[in-house]
Image (cartoon, rainbow, N blue to C red; front, side, top):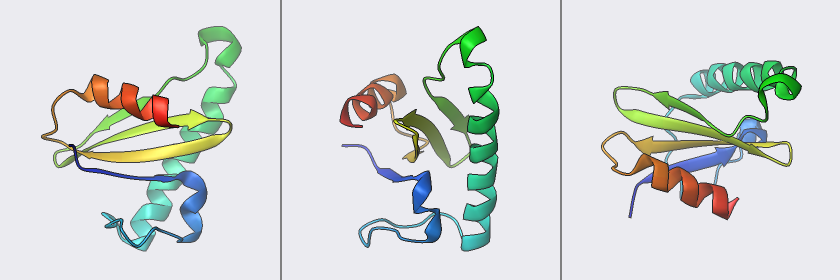
Length: 97
């Protein structure tokens, strides 16, 4: 089983499930969500040209972040960088949401 931490962007208000361990401090979360929100907003203008955004992968030294959107809810999922089979993990997440 892989180590995942996820929360929809609308949890920006600071409501995080007690079982989740936050990786970022409050100000870092605000900045990260601003970046993702801007990306998603700008992408909406190109949907008719390039198609709907399936997912975004951000590779960091310690974690991999996957951003998905469904029904106007944006999901921000962090995955341990050492986790194998990222494509399979993303596919499983898409089935769950």
